[in-house]
Length: 469
Image (cartoon, rainbow, N blue to C red):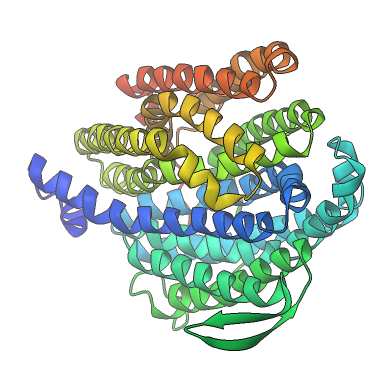
């Protein structure tokens, strides 16, 4: 059916829906693996107490900021690849792939250096208490050193997705999740006795605590990045460059196209993640219990919106290839199908999250205060998930069309004016609830803004500069 998009074959609504589900299924699994990765780190470290959990929660928003720069860089090139594949120009798609490797690695090495340089100061800047600063600094240092592996993982994954291969990135995300569990099991905890079916076992452990979680995740990323790179550059029938000569030097045309997409996404990332960091600064004075509850609740909420991000990945591929094949009507149809499907899925998961919030939070922490507070804020957030889904999936469609400037402005205004503005006023009066209530209001506002954007036609009127082979 993807070939049918390129060849001009008419697809019925049923076929479009089926293709959407075939693509979003693996993408949702990939999102599940990503959320599980965060869940595993948080739960394993959370078993050590509130302070270790709070140390990771303190710098979480900064890791999102760095990750946002990396992901946006990937999208600047992968959207070009989706359009070129939709147009049937596989050779130029591989040219863009080569140039993306050079550009993205250069950018992420700079990020890694910055992260290493600020790691010891960051927890203090964020207002962390004395008992969590050291662990937070060490975790962020190790995270910064692992950024190149993350970049390769994401770049190859987005390239495969835009070529229509959603399965391999999903499988590799699951592999990374499994590896993270194994490495964390031995690195976080000390050597200990375990009873299993009546037998006593001595399990070796490094006893590194919070730093062990960072090392485990870094090792899992490194192995997964190597495998993903091999699948993309060697085994992919469309993207493989191993048997074809070509330059890795970045051309002005390719870089201009990439920056047209990535530039607004970077500005959005600074604004959005900056707002998240501001949120951490707002929440941090509430103490380790509130900070841990906030971090755990955000991680748990990730299970709710993973279908939205999975559907957004499918929307980027389908809209991008449809527009590359000059099929605007089909692109609009896919944008609507993915939008309403994502909203339906996230609404169902929001209902489950509302009902089971205490039970889910108890898996994250043994601290009664953390569990109770986390469950309370999760139930507030359940009322935001339907329209949050609209903003996530509609943004994926816009990215597939190369439309990132206006959507970035919508995100910026919504986050800073509505969420942070209200949180500054309400959090000192209401505690953590005063931060999550504004979050719920803001996500609903953002969803309405994106429904307005996607209902028009201007978001599809973007052209790319031709990249020579």
